[in-house]
Image (cartoon, rainbow, N blue to C red):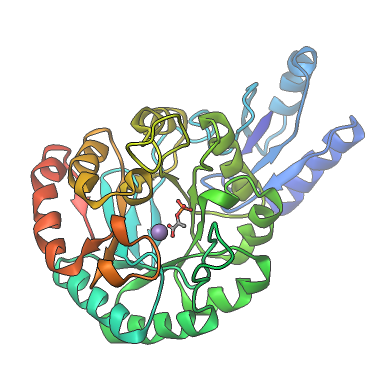
Length: 341
Ligand code: PEP
Ligand code: MN
């Protein structure tokens, strides 16, 4: 149950309602910073009528939502309109569309300079790159760590781009908050609830990738772990799931994008790079993602993919990137999207 409060309800109003719920044996959570203040608690179906009468009578209460869904704050029942989030001042959600582009891993300053130069020349404002890499093999390149974050700080100053990078451990949070504009939860941590709770209140927007073996319901419920713990800006990212198919690295699930947009108010972006694992599929998949209603794309781009330290086969060479972005324009226009603002 979500008890949605009026926008002018005070902290005391929320605390009083939480106390009333506690007295009834519930474990309420007060939620601030989303569209409206709210108090959320798990209630059984047979308690509904009594609760509605009691809480609706309170001046601070605007409406009460009962839902049997595992996710509540992400749901359209809670917020009917699309949420628009901002990464470093660049809007995403509703009609606002962003391309997030950059290498799989931050490798060195020159590589990031060349990438930032290229993407900026195409109007793209959001630069991605992993400083801490969750690699399948412990013997593979694990990322530059702090040195990668220093590179981000320098590139941000030089090119006026905003930075998106993955967080794999709570231990890195303070340093990441100082160097980047958006945290990414990777597919391997898409259901790492402790990590989600630990980073939720850091004050940065979070891109939540769908865990590779997660259902849509599990993915959206993971978003609620962020929202209920204080994250104001959650962006969902479909990046392909494990199936029996071997022609692609993962299977891009565009129906999940459509469902996530129907079921939630959150922006949904698509990462075709990790879904396909092959550069030759990226343009048609990107165009399909836009047509399916995605609010953004995450694309791996590298100055020289053949020598990349990770994911070489799926990165767009910087030389091909301007043409790639141009080829998206007809679909972006057809969908009435405002891109890279
Ligand atoms: C990434 O974006 O760098 C990444 C590791 O992706 P995923 O978590 O989707 O595998
Ligand atoms: Mn990668």
